[in-house]
Amino acid sequence: MARLEQVAGAAVMALFLADIFMTVLYARAGTGLLAPRWNRMVWAALDGVSRLFGRRRGAVLSYGGPLIVILLILFWALGLVVGAALIVQPELGTAITPSSGDTPKDFITALLVAGNSLSIVGGGSYSPHTGGTRLLYLLNSLIGGAVLSLVLSYLVQVYSGLRERNTLALTVELMTGGTGDAAEMLARLAPEGDFSDATSELGNLIRPLAQTKEGHHFYPLLFYFRFREPIYAVSRFCFVLLDLATLIETSLDRDKHGAFIRSGPVGSLPQCALMLLDTLDGNFPTADEASARETYEESYAAAMATLRRAGIEPRPDAAGYADQRRQWEPLVRRVAPTLGYRMEEIDRRPPSP
Image (tube, rainbow, N blue to C red; front, side):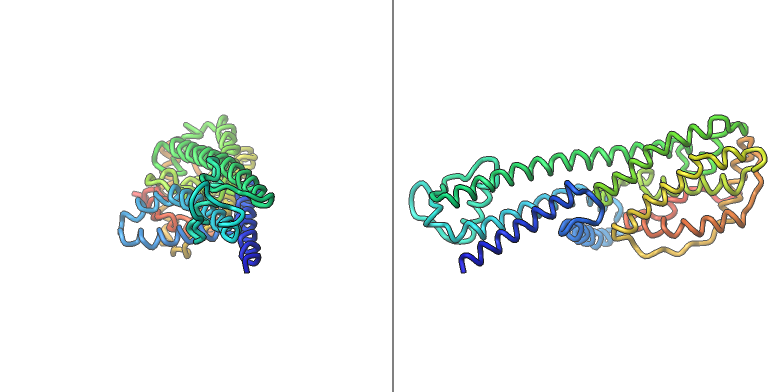
């Protein structure tokens, strides 16, 4: 029976170590054994609680990322300690004893001994007296030190990726003049209809957008970081970039601006934005798609008015705009509400006067 308990403990430790390896070292979205399910469970619980707060739901969800980080570390630590305790308990009183007094053999004592042997402070007052238990203590101390180092370095990368994502989101917001309107962004890229710098300006967004996409692929914890300000929402800056590319395709004169329309950045930005949204949609527990209000005509008319005020004379294709937007907007509508954002916060273009 004791041997069976120790085999079970070794299996539990191996399972949690494999999960840490898949999450921290292998680093691919959806590849963890336990962490993805644990994170989704915590997020689902927080989401359920947040709905009790009505319009303050978003503020509650903003604690989701940090909370999941803390609970994931505790989950891993508890799993390793429980596994080690199952191995240690049969050895209490024989191969593992305290420096003085009787040896309690209950599971709580086994947890204490296992936790101390996994920590960097050592085994406390309990000492091993056989070759096997000494080896166990050594192995536990190596595992504890290695896991601590790996988790700390992982968190550094997660928060670095979060900073890069927020920098990109703020850059896009500033390029729209703080309006969140892709038409305003296009007008600012080509003041008075001058598109000479527009390609390079958009090209500067490719690298940070690709880094943000890969950051979410390598560090799925980024999925759960949500800020109160909508300008930092992945769904918002992706919406702006997708809407921008759609406006370029359906409103500019191809005879005058054909080189810009066919340039690499114009094609790459929406492609990468869709890949980022698809990564979240495929690995994050997104909501059911919210129904569209079919206000594309008003939205497009407002965009055309913005371009004309900026000195850009468009060649409108409202039907083409609506067709393209129907292809990518459902993806935005699945991702946005899960993180507590309303479409009114994502699509900021005012209706046409």
